Length: 125
Image (cartoon, rainbow, N blue to C red):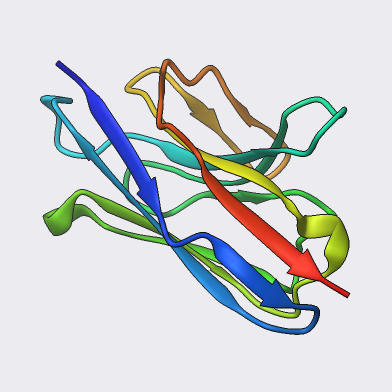
């Protein structure tokens, strides 16, 4: 059974930083693509940042480029998202996703099958 668990959200002032973490278990593979998505109230879910199995390819949404950094520790089956210079428009529920068949390139990430429960990020102005 695959389990994806995200953590690290919270309330932060604009300009502040947060680090999200995500652990995935149950995928019997030597690494797999993973990603972060977010959904704000009344808006569609959007891809924030994704990383390939080995970490050699990453995707960033234009809105977070230069402010967010995605990384992974395959030995710990853990994904991270370091968020800096946070803005009120970054407020959303952030979801972690993982899948053997996901696609990650510099311009696209998607086709994720397994999703975590979400962690709330709120940025106050």
